Image: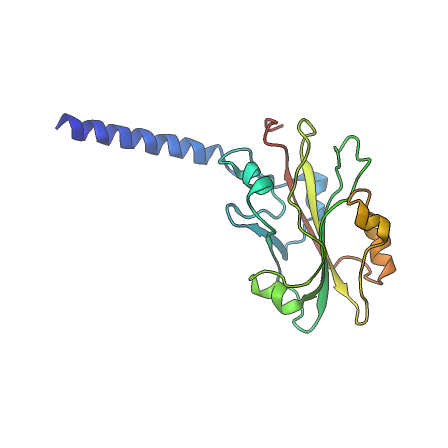
Length: 204
C-alpha cells in the first residue's frame, strides 16, 4: 500500500513540476513599435514550438537550442496569397551582431524566389528557387534579443532575382531595399518577425 501511495505522491509532484514549467514557458507576444512590423496574415511555424510570428521565443524547454541547432527551415504561410502568382521570401536579422551595434545589419538567413502562391496557402512547405540556403538564427551571447524578420514580395513576371558576387560571398550587410529595387519587387506584401536570444543569456 505504501508503494502505491509513494508512486501516487511522486506522480503528483511531477505533474506539479510540469505545470510550473509550462506556466513559466509561455510564449510572449512582441509589443510596442516592433509589433508594427507584424502582418496578421503571414505566419512562421517551427516543428517544436508552432507559430512564432510576432512572438518572443523563451529560453525554456530547449526552444532556443533547438531553433539554432535542430530545427530546419520553418513552414511559412500567407493566407492572402494568390495561387497564380509567384513570390520572393527573405529572412534577415537587422540586429547583427547586436541591436546596439548593427554593423552587419540585415544578415541574410534565407532567400527564396519563384515561390508558388498555392504553396504559401497550403502550409506544406515552400518549393521555390533557393538563392540563399536557410541558416537558423545564431545570435552571439550577451547581445540581447535579435529580431528575425520575414519579408514577402510579389515577384513580377519575367523578374529573376539573384545576388551580386559580393552578396554571395558575405551574408551580412545585405540591403533589402536595394535588392527589391533591382528586381522591381516593390514593397513587401506582408512582413512578420520573431525575437530570440542566445541560449547562454538569461531572458531580459
